[in-house]
Length: 202
Image (cartoon, rainbow, N blue to C red; front, side):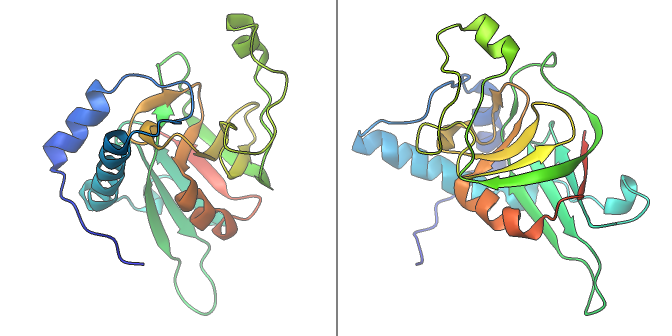
C-alpha cells in the first residue's frame, strides 16, 4: 500500500539522531500527535537511506563467502551483501539501525551469524540484571520483547542483530550493545542471511 511521502532533511535527520534521548522501554503511547511524529521520523529515516555512504564489501572482507554484513555504528546503518550465485551477482541492501548507547558497550571487529530465531525470547545479561535487579529472567516473544520479531545471533556472546518494537530507537544510540532494525526491515533481512554469514562492526 502506498503511503504519503514526507521529507526530512539530512541535517534535521542527523540532528534528531544526535539529540535524541536514550529510550529503554517499548513505545506504547496512544496519542495521535505522538504517533504522527513517530511516523514522520520513520519515513524520514527511510528517505534518508540514500544519504548513507555506500561501501564495497571488498573494503572489509576477502571474499563474500555465504554473505556479508557491515554494521556501521557511526552512520548507524547496516550494509548487507548476499553471496554471489551462478545466476547473477550479489545483491546489496542498506538498513537504518540503532546502535549501542556508549563506547563502553560498543564492540567492533569481526564475528558471524551462528543462529537465527523468529519470535525470539529475550534473556537479560548478567550485567543488565546487576544494574537492574527488577528485570525479568526471560521475556517471551511479543510486543514487550526488546528483540522484536526476528533475531540474528552473533558469535560474540550476548550480541545480536534484531528487530525492535520501539521504533523511536532507530537512528539513535539506544541499545546495550546490539544492532537494532525496524521489525519490517529485520523481517526483510532475516531470510536473506544464512547461518555463517560474516559480520563486521565498525
